[in-house]
Amino acid sequence: MKLLRVGTAGAERPALLDQDGTTLRDLSGLVADIDGELLADASALARIRAAADAGELPVLEADGLRTGAPVARVGKVVCIGLNYHDHAAETGADVPAEPVVFFKAADTVVGPNDTVLVPRRSRKTDWEVELAVVIGRTARYIEDDEDPLSYVAGYTVAHDVSEREFQIERGGTWDKGKNCETFNPLGPWLVTADEVPDPQALSLKLWVNGELKQNGSTADQIFPVAEVVRYVSQFMTLYPGDVINTGTPAGVALGQPEPKPFLRAGDVVELEIDGLGRQRQELKDA
Image (tube, rainbow, N blue to C red; front, side):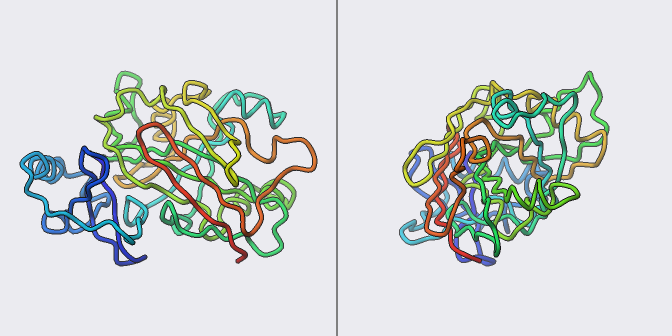
């Protein structure tokens, strides 16, 4: 299933995208929202699926309807840095021996087509298309003989917007360059895990002002999705509705020759992942 949330910010309603790829169906008569509570409730998800198969869900008029982030009340956004061989190479970084883990605050999450704000005094705002994993059941200390993907509710597209000067040149950890407002557009859909049989076989693309900048595959990940979920669960408890951004392929502005083409107000970024949908953001000054 392709689950999404539509409406004005803060007042989104749950919806489903029909198999035709164009028709929206209203889920508000069945569930209150798409959040961790829903994703952990197998019976509620089964009711949605049954109602969709039976053609019982009312149609939503999509014209002019904003798409919000597909998961409400995200608990935490865990991010994996330097997780593609080609991205590590372009930035001159060594391939990490273990996953590089950092966080984005949940309030950085916005809708897939919402405005992205270039921070004040920013000179190096950068783009990163990423596969995002959404957790469906509580994961803690996943054992080697368990399947980490059984803890995954679904997948979506994330834009891990980053300010490289804040991240790298201003001292401390990466947090200052990763947590500016609007820096994690998410969506458009949460595609349930049963529709993504192999998360290591997805192409990722990103364009800036119509020019293709990133064109990669999750097959190039240093630590595949299953290993990332297992690894992260050794250090923190993952709850339903938590999000893991799994890294970006080569092609970011940081890896380009000088003068590096960092983002400015007025730029338009578009990104997509196979089967998970497409985002589009116009940048404006904060």
